[in-house]
Image (cartoon, rainbow, N blue to C red; front, side, top):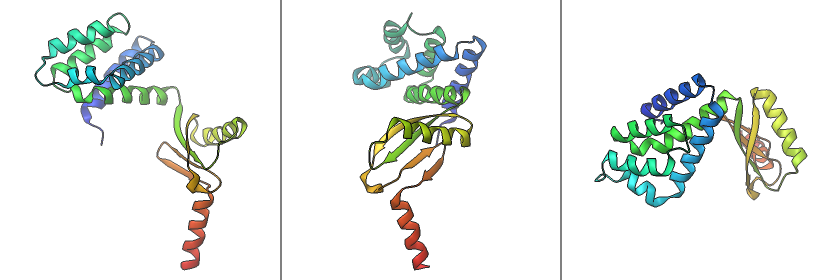
Amino acid sequence: MERIAVTRYTKALFEIAIEKNQVKEYNQAATEIHDVLASDAELMAVVNHLSISAAEKMTTIKAIFEGKIPDDFIGIMDLVLRRGRQGELLGILRKFNELYNEYIKVARATLYSPTELSRPKLNEIAEVLGKKLDKTVDFDFILDPALIAGFRVEVDGHVFDSSLKNQLGMLKRQLLA
């Protein structure tokens, strides 16, 4: 379950981005900050260390990010660190990206298939799903030989399963009933 603080901080930051008409730029900044923090174990150790003060953590954060990202991100990170919520920093940045995708009507989907799919087939699937969801669909592709044939898509809490594995499972349940 998502923490309430993550939602509040993220919504506040997103509203500022909308006010300043810089939603795309703020999303790029959120992605960059997330990537840096998630890929640098030493930096995350500093951010999460209980013996290091919030002021010292902010000195490090500013040295890395100041001038490269909007000041509002520096401010929100400072607030998060001063309130001892450093463990929620990555969640705030991920949630910002989710809000951005909702704002521009893009759905992230995971597509499972036993074989690689051609670009035209992916485009066709994305178009059909996009019409159902009234969004543009971007895929993360996962090769799953257990599906045998067909594909399975997970998007926005929905599962669309046209795999042979699923069809065989449904047939088995019908025969056993």
